[in-house]
Image (cartoon, rainbow, N blue to C red; front, side, top):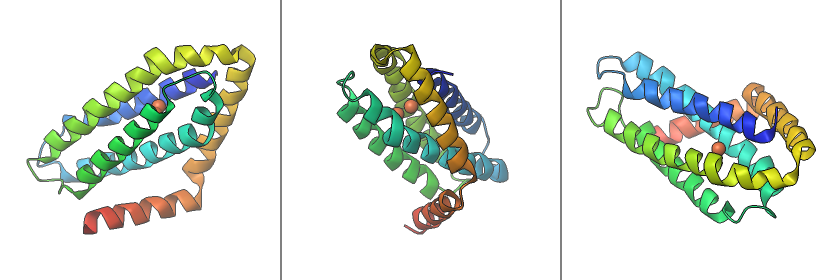
Length: 160
Ligand SMILES: [Fe+2]
Ligand SMILES: [Fe+2]
């Protein structure tokens, strides 16, 4: 799979998790926690593989990088707010919707503007980069360090 295809598949998963979260009710606290934890984990992995591998690779062909980095920080801030909101709070879904809207905007911008610019790298390079992204994604998904980061992040965000 080419790098842009790997990232679009992951965007679909992130958008799906957010959509599922907005469809939960205030009574479904267990499901909200479960979906939120998956979202935290997948967003952490996504941001990391883009920051580590994809963005540096497209630096010379896309002028959108500083904007994209700023949007990652915004997503991180809004995710922190969602993490701090109790799952039975009526503000939970409105907060999720704000995060969803930012994430939709950011992923569309990548898919419609940055990924077409990335085609300048050529098909071979995009295939190679796609394999690296998938490998890193799998590595992070099973890494003890990532589990620790997520546990710490969850604990910290909920204490604030
Ligand atoms: Fe991104
Ligand atoms: Fe992305």
